[in-house]
Amino acid sequence: MKQSSYSRFLVKLLGSGVALLLLVLSTQCYGQVSSCVCGFITLHVRGTGNTSSSALSFLGLGLTRSVVFRGNLESFGPGTITDLQAHWTDNQFNGANGPHYLEITSGSHAGFLTDILDTDGLSRTLTLADDLSSVLSGGETYTIRKHWTLATLFGPNNQAGLGAGSNVSADEILIYNPATGFYTTDFYKTIGLGGTGWRSTASSSFNQANAQLDLTQGILIRRKQAANLEIKIFGTVKTGPTMAEVQPGLNILGNVYPIDTLTLGNSCLYTGDLSTGLTGGSNVSADKVLIYDGLTYRTYYYKTLGLGGIGWRSTASSSINASGTILPAGASILIQRINNTAFLWQAAQPF
Image (cartoon, rainbow, N blue to C red; front, side, top):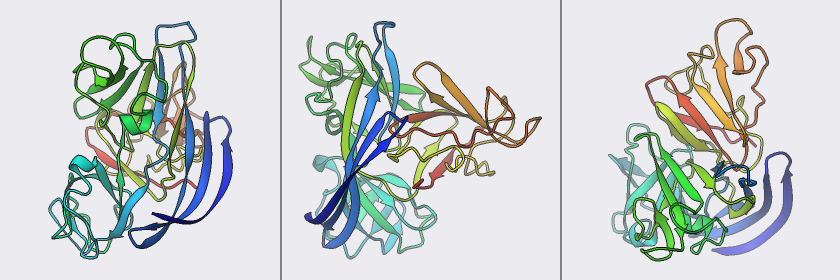
């Protein structure tokens, strides 16, 4: 990439625990000029304060990695897209080059993210993890980025400073899979058999440095050290809408935007349609949104019946309008989907 100009400014996000430094860049990307807003956010991980054995923090990836390619797709097939104007090499966006994902940036499914499984340079075709043939019409724009990994987010040698040690003593990074109902747990290992480095509790010897962290995934940190920890993430501001799958049961999803302007009211979590949003109802029957504040889980739902009016409410009050409740930047929320169908949450860019 060729940088031609930039300006710099600091945005302070009061009350969010996230500091954001932005750089507005004009860059040359594979012959196409694009603009991006780059910088860092500071994520805050709670320590125990010597009052408990561990402390929880629900984090979100508020910045993406840089765009490595952008284009327009000419055609598509079951699980593939083709861009005849592209110039790719085989496996450029997969395999040894690390995990990449494609984002559709126009059309009805703008904001849809899907992993790239294969890159064919000769046919200029990408094989994707999802079949989008039923929702694409041709001509949609797209971008390609590398995924965050444990090494790129926290440093290959744990430069972020999480507590290291064994699978018992080290701080833990937990990723919840709503399809299975289980967490994967990773930590930075410095003692015992199996060597030093990023490991999973499933294996003390397999290197997890390149373990993929999806942009919309919430990241749960279980810290076992007394002191709080600040982690800086350097990246690019995500623009446009973003789609994330909400499955039946528990979901932990990150706020992908780096400023405190995403609220329950503008989140598009409730659309009035069960196929595109949360189920409304009472504090018993409605789907729930939970936000952890370090001490308790504050629970919200979209109220459609009973005394107290209609709209976003907290389980603490059926009448006070909660639509202005912030989904914090640099954090993740929990969604308890009571309805037994999944849907794609299409969050609009909140700035």
